[in-house]
Length: 265
Image (tube, rainbow, N blue to C red; front, side, top):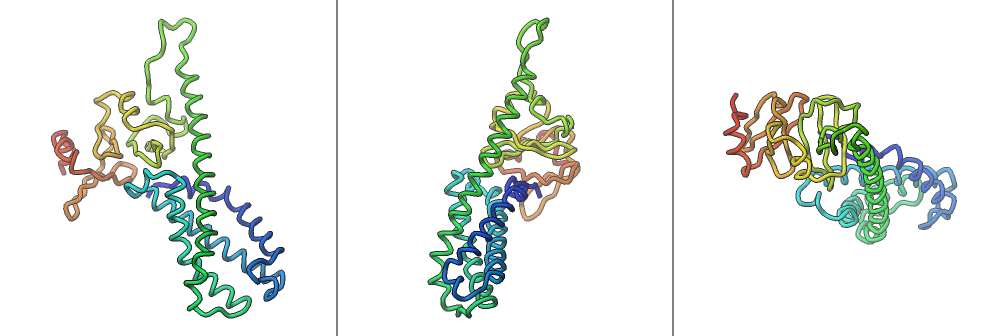
């Protein structure tokens, strides 16, 4: 499974989550000041904060791979994530507060849910916008690097032609295996790993020579020589690449893939 940008950004979220828990513990909102001492409030908001945060991140990573939700605006997608994350968070609040403070019956869950959902939606949207900003910053840096590489040398006869391989970070090498659309970005998969760039798949295919590979799905392109095996399960066709990556083949492209001889074996 690919590494989501939400999962990759986990270390950047932790300090604000801890800071939020400390502020909440000191101020003691929602009646916690009257029913818990400072140590218990720190434990309470720390546990609830970390659990809610992880639920939001994992749901965001999951939704990032589901069509057509992956093409929704970030705020809308993350608002949905926040509402869904509020369901387990509501019961976690009941359990943890009953353990550290005063008991709360499970029958209170419907009354607690709207307040919990408001908080998790706010947290989700903030996380989504933060990740989007980081992706854009990385993409801008990548575009600047590519633009610098594309500048013609003083003795060059003319401007350099578009070359997709300039977009691949040097650490990933040049053994290109596949391209994947992800959250309005393009994930480049090589034998050494993967990374995101701000580029549409159709623009990437324009920069790549036609003989280098072919599109197998609305969101996937696979390079020649990248396939290790083919799996057929319940009518679904999956290409397994040399690095273990599994790429679905849609019905739209199945005949073209077959004609290319990629389904032998």
